[in-house]
Amino acid sequence: MPSAAAPTATASPSAPSATAASGPWGAYPGRGEACAAVAEDLVALALLPASLSGGPTTEQVHAVEDQVAGMLAAAPPELAADHARVQLLVDSYGEELVEDPDARFDGEALDEALAPVRDWLDGTCRDTR
Image (tube, rainbow, N blue to C red):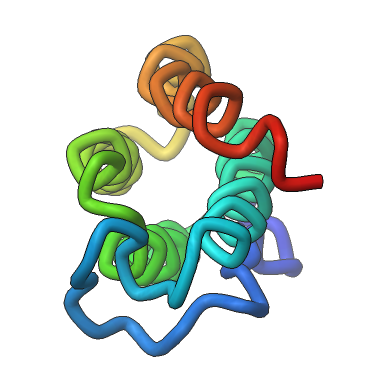
């Protein structure tokens, strides 16, 4: 039975509107802002397996997909493909859920998709603290 609470990733509070990213830092004005927002996004995305494990509805999965789309739109261009991969994982899970209500989100594939984001943060943002 689907959970009453909607499992969702939280979009970065500092994320600008979901407009196309431009410039080296995406939709963010500078490296510090991009680093902070991408770090927040990474935390939210890393929690997806837990938040999607309680029997979410397809509507709840679509809401998460929309939030990931917002992260993708704001991300620095260097991370766009990685965010798109996460979005595809969420979309695929939603499609699987329609056919099999017991489908499980692929947390291992998510971890693999997030590895380049962690590497980007480590290489780009290490000295912004």
